[in-house]
Amino acid sequence: MTVTPLRDTTRSNLPFYEERVDMAAAFRWTARLGMNEAVANHFSLAVNDDGTQFLMNPNQVHFSRVRASGLLLIDANDPETMNRPDAPDPTAWGLHGAIHRNVRHARCVMHVHSIHATVLASLADSLLPPVDQNSAMFFKRQVVDENYGGLAFEEEGERCSKLLADPKTQVMIMGNHGILVIGATVAEAFNRMYYFERAAETYIKALWTGRPLRTLSDAVAETVADQMDDYPGQADRHLAELKAILDEQEPTYRA
Image (cartoon, rainbow, N blue to C red; front, side, top):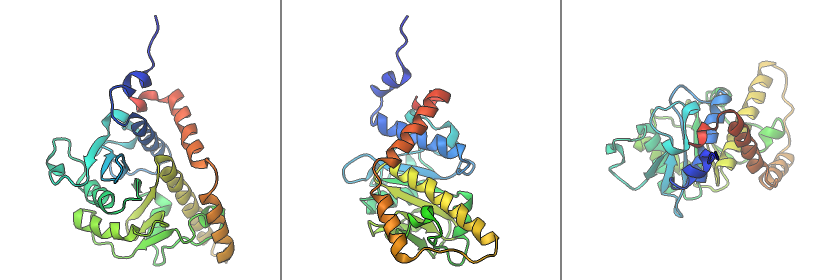
């Protein structure tokens, strides 16, 4: 008896199946890294040309249980979104809806309260300085939201979206809140989120020593950032390897 692989039968029944699989993998691996927070936080991925239709995690489902089929398909311009029976988390709608309406280049948006990045967001100076190769990746590619005003409902989401107008910006350090990372694909956004958290951890632990920091010059930091932006295929390979592990260990993410 031949058993048809789950991924084949599912692909034929779901719109944007491959995109859903990438998203589900990112959720599952974020949980493995301990970068999720309870049943909060959210990722989204634009699926149409102008970016206003997007996939997003269902309301208050733990990242470790997200499946491809469970992702919501949302229209950023639909005023009835929060009246749907499967309405998203209101802060997810407020933040991600505004970004997908207003920031066309932000195809994939990932928002977390990961520990070290949130510690960074709690400092009076929340910019990540180029103290190592990982942190140099984000030189002049980050913006700090200095005006946290409460939960990211629609008004707050609209305000935050304006901070992402510069296409060079990759990370918004949300002061007193967490971080938000954008990318052209799931692989790109996830890779950036992963490396930003790693870089923030290195920086915070370096501060713990109380010793002077070895900070890179602006010229070297800019060179590293440019080199990493152009590094061939690294983000795609990163996500592909994570999916290969998940295929072996918990293939239900594809369902």
